[in-house]
Image (tube, rainbow, N blue to C red; front, top):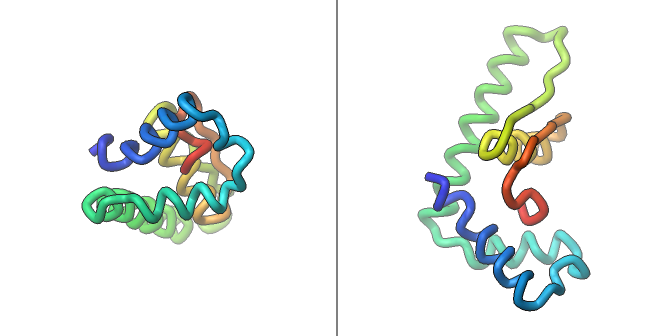
Length: 103
């Protein structure tokens, strides 16, 4: 669900409103903080979506080996596109994606 995917991002954004320091912290540190505080059910939800995206991308690359692939999406789909692109090293464009700085 959206809650499982964006709960950590929402908490990080709220904390950044209270004490705006996250922009000065390296992204690798933020990623470690997020990983450390994710509940197992939320991590499982995120991992399940990523596995589906990776499998779908592999299927498409097998079916269309000569085509260039670019992940795109809007809102929640934009978040998935950016996350999948970053994790798989492929181009991605997200429009109005929530929490992309913290993913």
